[in-house]
Image (cartoon, rainbow over all chains, first blue to last red; front, side, top):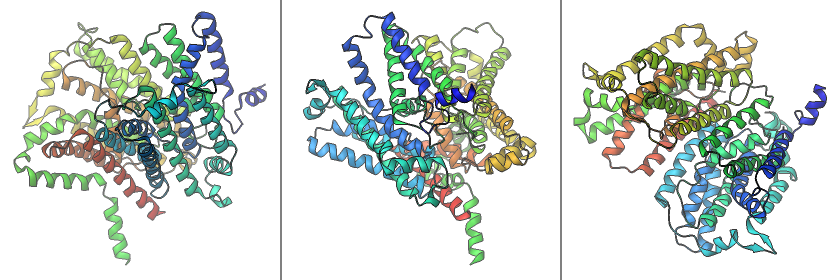
Length: 313
Length: 315
């Protein structure tokens, strides 16, 4: 029985334990659809996707780093920095490349401190979070400014009759699927996360870990572009929650923080579950404070379900 | 050649916090010589006592390859318990005992989940932190809580030989922790888990129990820090904590305790003092908040790189 249930739960699989959050998410959906009329309305589902889109983008990057036994706490301040740069009243063809360059630079610095200088990922990205947050407050000391209309057009409206946030999510998932589950680079990520012996099999550990951190920063920057289009201004504190929320979503999706086990579909399910819970409790008029408590309890429950060998981080 | 490498090895064994502290002290002495005074510096040091006490717990968990991010939540809850007026007619000892009990139980919950369930410490302590913050905000319901009983404030403003009472309390607590880690079996267990958890396990060290105990002590320290913090601001607040946790990790690393390094009390102790001095130096230089954040991040990163390079040259 236990062998069968472990197989079904995916406890021995490289994809991690993603079936449990999927069942919970479906149960939540069913319950909410019965208890409130608004939940299943197309308007609400569209809202849900638009709310979840930036989290999905950040979490994909976070998952890539976690797969190689890393952690990126600086994603939140990268999101803030991006909205700050975009609201500086410069043309799009200057600000968007500037944003991506900044993201690549931050990712490279994170990666170099982790690989070359062997700083623990939590410490390296924590200090980078402080530095980037400081730079953000130089660029935009308080919320305000306006975002160029081109970016606004990218996140609102429709293309071929499909709403733009939906397109962003689909494109992000397709790109990430190719990177994580459909390329040699993705396979190497799993190998590096799986054990310390990947190097002896001819996998360039340093280069791949470096690329993982750069990808994480870039995904965070793309999430920042999306958010800037949604709020049509810059905000130095808008990204603060994304560091914790993305780790929560990734862990919910069955990706193990010890590295080497995880999946894109799990991460997307984790993000969806978080968004459904927040949305559902809003519809049911649950206090925002209770919502944070519930979020914490869910995180605790899911993390205690994951079997691990090592103690600690 | 060999002598030179020995010399550099000795230099590398000094925690970065000592060097940073000396540099900051000299800077302050050059810029504002009149600030170098026991009473004035004591007042500055008093501001970082809560941070210093959190660090005493944090260094324990960090050196046993774990981490505690829930100190902010514990501080918030203790602050709420004291200032909300719920326990207004309780005797002081009972209030303090209750607060310490809160810290102990949060620490124990952390420890059991990390040690026994083997869940990731980052996630567990983060989740407990979210739960505690949500709980306090729900109980307070958006309203700022009331005032803190007067005797807390009076205790906080006490001075002996021109040194503030909280600073003396902190030094005593650090001394106690140092003696405890240096002389007890538990201290050696933490040390051995820090250097290598697998060989510690095979040498008969009760790894799970040690991790649970380390987290429990860390939770207790958070509660003690919360008591000092609450008496320092004298009013209830629903907004503080996150930067304290980040600073406690930073000070611990600056003090030379990295994941899997032996727990030494005085390096992180000076690391906390560095933060007090850094604040003073930057304020006298007129540095704004953004630059403070950048400088703080750079200092942590450089200290960590320093240790990373060192561990590489050793292996």
